[in-house]
Length: 204
Image 1 (cartoon, rainbow, N blue to C red):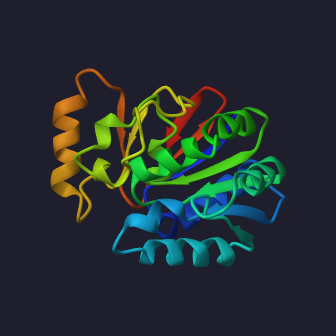
Image 2: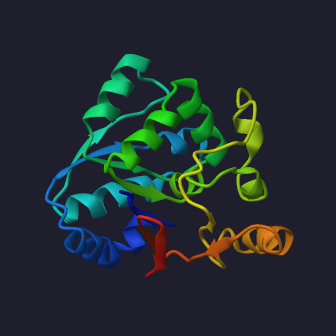
Image 3: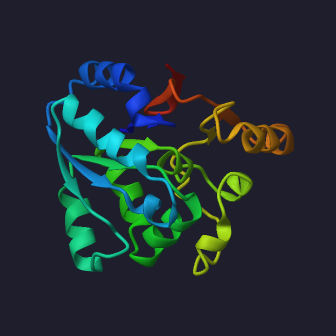
């Protein structure tokens, strides 16, 4: 049972997230919040805004930087989590760190078991089968240990966050022009979200 909320910008989709929580009767107030993708970004204000938005909705956040936490603690935190939220940043670096700690397949397993997943930007893209398509948006050189771009393959489409939103206007248009003929790209802006239930998805 997949219960997934994908957004470009958590703080821009509070209303949709509140509706998602109500419709799915989510009673847990604890979120495992992973800011790791922002480690290699010069601007990370959206992470603080995302944390504030989740706290505004009544959630308690347990912060986990998977890059600086040992593998055993990471696995314990993932195994215990009822809700996992992965914030935005560099998609390639995020996938590298998930794979480095053997957390990629554990996340697939947890979502399949019913763990609720909230993904923001990079945290949405990693759910696709492969992340190569976002290379004009994110710098892949920031993940020198990432051997391939195979991602989690939890969803059967390719999220395209920040559609026609600064500072990504040019890069998302390049991605759409290059890949829309052969990938099922789903563009969405900073005030839209994609809700995935079982095998269906809706842009809200």
